[in-house]
Amino acid sequence: MYEFVALSLKCRFCGESLMDKKVLVDNEPSIKLNVVQGDKKGSIHLSAIYGSYNYTSDFEIPKGEVATFSCPHCNKVMNSEAECLSCGGEMVPFYLDMGGKVSICARSGCKNHHVEFEDLSLALRKLYQEYGFRGRKFPKDERTPEEKYNKPEKKVDEDEEIIETGTFLQSYCPHCRKSLIENDMLKLKIINGEEGYLLLSPYLNSFTSKSTIFLPEDKAVSDIKCFHCNKSLVIIEKTCGKCNSPIAKINVSASTKLIDFFICTKKGCKWHGLSEDDLYSIKLEESDEW
Image 1 (tube, rainbow, N blue to C red):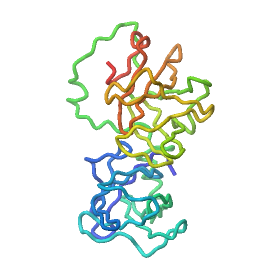
Image 2 (cartoon, rainbow, N blue to C red; image 1 turned 30 degrees about the vertical axis):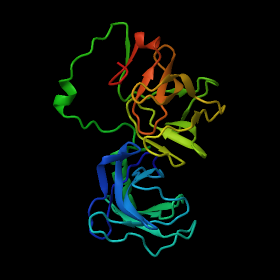
Image 3 (cartoon, helix red, strand yellow; image 1 turned 180 degrees about the horizontal axis):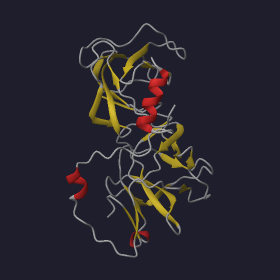
């Protein structure tokens, strides 16, 4: 399955879209549902990125507990009688806009899910049209012509290099110098109560991501490491220029050298920047840094 396929889902009863563009999870519109667990009830927003287990909820769902999900439009319970083959919990099926259905397990912490297509050839064709061969690369530019072309011009020195939005950032560990790119994704080891991996889009100003462990939105992770040498990439002498959270440092290649590139450790924060020395000669297009 593609790395960054954002699925668009709808209720299998009323056919209404479950997508919520106002609440982002993994920097994509989320899947909104009503949820009940024990004596608690509220709303939950699931990540639409296939293979991601991140979500936000009005209350914490204890790991191992089975929740009941319902449609926010028709209020019908979406849990089915089908059992999860991994844990025995109830499966929750949704319809895909492109045809077919996706099912997830209702037990908190279970990672079982699967997709069934009604017409595989049609679904694959739609996937290729939307995401290309390897999945989502750089998001569609949805700005209006006025937003694109009526922006105030920023003065740029002739000797400065501009790294343009959408540029593929060849990324390396600042300790062992090995590449952090794997299968066209920027791969990092993360520690946040448990150990897993974070996959980031390596394209400048593309903020799509997914992780192999649950990462709460708007919270900094405990540590980010190189998956080769296992050394921490978090630095203590600087913080995020937007939310003041800890930041991690990787190296990316500019035209003539490797430069320090900083990313925020807070989930959902889009800040990134360069070292003070590199700011004199290199600029990031549409960055908060300049």
